[in-house]
Structures are given as C-alpha cells and as structure tokens.
Amino acid sequence: MQRRNFLVGAVGTGALGASAGALAPAAASPRGRAVRTGLDELVSSGFAELAGQRVGVVSNPTGVDASYRHLVDLMHGSGRVQLAAAFGPEHGFRGSAQAGGSEGTGVDARTGIPVYDAYGASQARWEAMFTEAGVDTVVFDIQDVGVRFYTYIWTMYTSMVAAARVGKRYVVLDRPNPIGGRAYGPMMTSPYTSGVGLKEIIQQHGMTVGELARFFNATFLPAEAGRPVDLHVVRCRNWKRDDLAADTGVPWVMPSPNMPTPDTALVYPGTGLFEGVASITEGRGTCRPFELIGGLATDFDHHWGDRLNARNLPGVEFREAYFSPTSAGQKPDLLNKLCAGVEVKVVDRAVYDPIRTGVAMLVEAHKYPAFAWRRDSWDTVRPYWIDKLTGSPRLRTQIDAGADVDDVVGAWAEELATFNRRRRPYLLY
Image 1 (cartoon, rainbow, N blue to C red):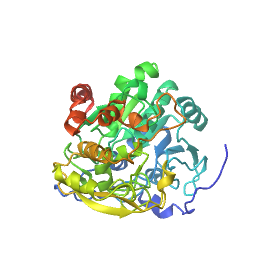
Image 2: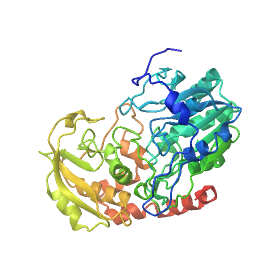
Image 3: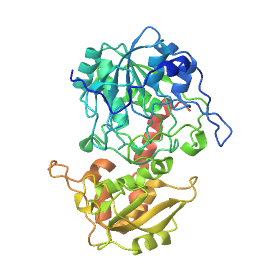
Image 4: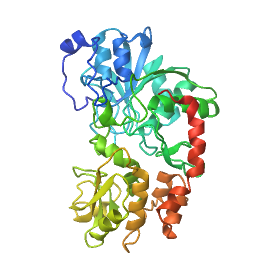
C-alpha cells in the first residue's frame, strides 16, 4: 500500500487520550432539548458497541462529538478500541481535497493508522480494502445533508454491500438530518442511476443516515449482496423530525468545501439542480455557494430576481446579486467572470420549500436565450446531467415544453406518496 502523510499536524494524543472516554457536554438546543448524536452516545457507553472488534472507520471531518473531537481520535486515545483503518470518501478522511477529489491512500499523521482512499470505490474495491485491513466491524459516521445527489449516502451504501458480502458487521453512528425529516421531490428511476443517485429514493429523502441504512438493508441489499448486512444503528437522542440543524445545537462541521453552513444545506435540495445547467453557476468558490446563483452578466440580469419575487414563494426572498465564482466545477467558461443573478434569502425556515423554489428558479431562468442544460460528452446515452440529478428526463422535458411550477411539482405526487409508505417502517424518530 502506497504510504504518505496527510496534511495534518503530527499532534501527540496524550491530552486527548486522557479525556477521550469522557462524556462530552451536549450543546444547548434552541428548542430546549440537548440533541445527542450516535457518536456522543457511543462515547458515553465507553465504546461498548465495538468491544472485542477490529474496527474500520468510514468518516470525514464531520465525524465529531459535541466538543469537536473526531471519532478516530477519540477511539485512538481511549485505548478501548482496536482501530484497524480509516476509509476516506470524496474530499478525503481529513478533508483536504476539493470536489471530485480525494486524499489518496497513506498513513494518518495524527494516529498512525492506515487510511484508504475510498472515493468512488467499487464494491469489489471496498471488499478488498476491508479484507486487507482485517476489520471485523465497519463504523460509518458522516454528516449527510439530506439530498439524494450528495454522495456520502452512496459511500455508505456501497460499503454496506461490500460488508455484507465479506461478512462484516456494520455500525452507523446516526446524526440529525440538518434539513428535517420531510421527504419531497422526484424519484430516481433505474435507467438514470449514477454516482449521484445509485438507487431509487426521493430527491429530498427526509431520513437520517441510520434510517437510510435500515431502508437500504431491507430494500436493496438482499438482491445486490445476497443478504442483508449485520447492521447496528446507534441512535441520536432527542432529535425530532421537524428539527432543522439550527434547532439541534449539534456542532456543524463543513461536510464538503462548498457546504459551509446549515443555511447552505437548507437551500441545496433546490439550488443544487443548477449543477445541471451549463450556463449558470451555483456560486462555487464564493462565500455563499448554492445561495448565489447566476450566469454571465452579459446574458442574465435583475429581471430574474424580480420575476421570482413576484411569485411570492413561501419563506424566501431573492436579492439581485453580482459575483465572480472562483471555482468553476464543470463550467470553466464562468470561472472568475462577472455573473448576474440572485442570492436566495430564506426568511422563514418553517414554510420554505427548497425544491419548489429551485424549480421556480429554473422555470424563470429558462426564459433567457442563454439558458442551456449541461451536456456531458462522456455519456452519449444519458447526456443531460439534470436527468441524473432529478432521476429521469421528466423535469427537463417539462420545462423545455413550457410547463410552470405546479405542473412540474405535481408530476411526482404519486411516487412521493409511495416512497413515504415504503420508508415508514425504517424510521427511528
């Protein structure tokens, strides 16, 4: 295995080790409840769920307790866990890589444990990594943001399938869904599955990672792995389904470089759809990614925001905005160019609907001659990225045909109702 040190200081573990088993104080919740994550519960139990096991951890910088201490550092310092390896998803285990990147395989400078590059790993690669590392139990602890095209849930899924195939236990340390427990949006369809949506779930799934793991285990693993995985979910305490991130008091650590705040997560189910528009940037490289949306100032103008405000969408206002993105993603023609568009200002979280808002933004943006869907030359069969994001060509073809927001949103009512029925047995909160 190729070895290298990650971009983290080689800090000693003495002070951390002395307190690693201590119960971290839960942060105060604005709703008067101390919400505790699965990691907080695991630490308070003295890591009882992992006793006698060689443990491999799938995590990133979000895997922290209420005092911002990382799961792997806590395990290493406690002396109670046989820590065998860590596995880094997109952006890496310690989080030093940008979108579409990873840290590579090497040795963690803080703990000295091997770290495997798991970004984009196939199930066969996961199986090989688990076998090489000699793990008995795989622990997953990553903060999700509640959207099908945010890739960490598919890291969890593929590693679950691999664990089932090679007979490993799988433990999910649950965390609150930062945008709440309501499901909404279109369903993925099997012809359009990809790395931003491997299986048939709703776009805003409204589940915690622990609930998703239970759903995946019962719904998809028996066919794909031949059997369910030996799954254990360490539940959160005191989280309610209508809680948003701001209600919980749970520490927020950026799950990726362009997901800096809970406000970003709140708008992402809708404005993330602009990843599928070639002529419009979703504000990557600005201080408000996914809240600042715009195209070249020669092509778009203030009328976009005016028309959106005239719609009186619930819980949101649109500010005329101008900015220059310093990260282009798949849109190099917009890099460092003056863009005109809107800043999405959520004024009432309780009634704000991110996907309906995103659809309205697409409908109005489509009226500009410069509007163009993103086409990927490497996929000649399914070239439109928006189809992979939404799960089918339906949204794109409706908007191209002139459909308004109610028509687009109404098209997924039946599949959403079906998904809500299917997911109900696997909900924990």
